[in-house]
Length: 524
Image (cartoon, rainbow, N blue to C red; front, side):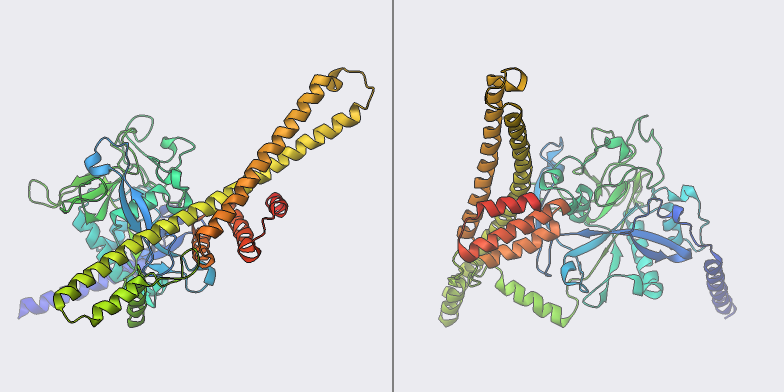
């Protein structure tokens, strides 16, 4: 009896002490959790008056069942069994529901690796004192520690910062480790980079890799763990995605089997390399396996292994959301959506479904149902390939329009030069300098070449408009225009809009207005 009462009093005193310590903890200075602040940062509160900074990672998707095809891995890696190029898909759990133009789905990823200070604020009973060394990544922690950190941080946020968490369909998001796909998609730069840049060994590093990643060697980390956020970020504003501390994933390690992952789930997936990784090994594709448990039976840890977290959302958030997903799923692979080149769906899947329902023989019914599912799957694959082709055409059209503008400017310069020569060399002028016959002929040749190149590209531009309108229905293209506006780079998105304007005009009247298109591209 005495021991029970004594233990209860001890727990009460401990709780009061922890509450008092948290109340007296000093507010963290921004330099301890966000040394490279940016207006697009999303800041979440933490215990002990701390903070954690996140970045929005857009995925170029709009509806709950919409996802985007991405290729992970690399064809240049030495360990192809782990790093070979592998198709995958990405989507975000949140959508911008307050603004019609911000419907793109996204998730949030921590801007920096979880620091020692942040780890201690969540895991320790007593609040840590903020200091610069606390900005080093929390390393020598196990996968179980990282998951437990996420769990405890979630519990604290649900009680103390639920209003700060993003919501999807009225349901609050939650903290967890990133998936392998989420991490590599963000590490490569997501939609902030071009398709070719996404497939490079690293995100663009114009100042050299050592300006963006800590790796082994005296010219970089020199064998020491570094403070988070000292170097430059990747195109999404994420720091230390490569190097410094390697990062643990939520999902277990899998081998590569050419165009897919192998069926066995293994140990901990670790990404990004660390301050002990050589410069030549650092890449966005680097993926290794660590055991969940070390040889001594304890949870495995490493002095160069840490983690960062994401904010994600549940999928089935409400009854209405489930109905929405059901309706979207039923439409997958159907051919009654009037999306072929002439806008009329053949509805073969629907007709096959009706035939299946009318048949009484169960064996035949099962075979027809299997055929129906296979047809839907094939249709879905066809539609995804079609949509990808349309987005490529939109990119090409935008690029050609910018090229036309440059070529027209070059042509007008040559026209001005030709006019100057004509004024400087009237009939009967002495044939010297600019007035030499060879110089005059050369200027005419240059002018003709400039016009020829401009007209060739302008004709190619017009050809893409005609061929696109012939191949695809306007409603189908409209859907991909909306997606391209979400995923395109700012300087190219404007020209996508112009190309779409010209395409709409051609859909409407069938007229090839080269001169007007030239003038628009020049002035845009």
